[in-house]
Amino acid sequence: MPHKSGFISFIAGVLLANPPAIAADETRIVLAEGEGRDQVQALCSMCHSVDYIVMNSPFLDAAGWEKSVRKMVTVMGAPISDADVAVIVNYLSTRY
Image (cartoon, rainbow, N blue to C red; front, top):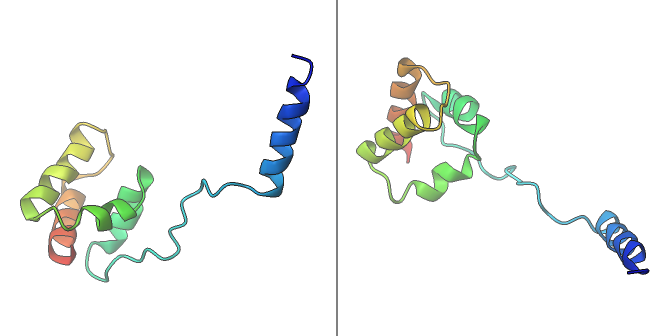
């Protein structure tokens, strides 16, 4: 295809001139104040966006948050200590 490189250059030019919104903008997501917020922001956001917390809050009670956080540690390999798990679960279950 003789025009393939021209088409790729055209697309690259369009994308550079008008970059797609592919990066998450979390400037409006502010977690509720409370003990454990710092741990949640530091430890949970290592792997996923904090909007996950807000999106799932209508569906999770204390037991659900406990199961979710434990899954992050045991299945996903999140480096969170048992002490921090307790603080995170308490924060999430009382604030969300």
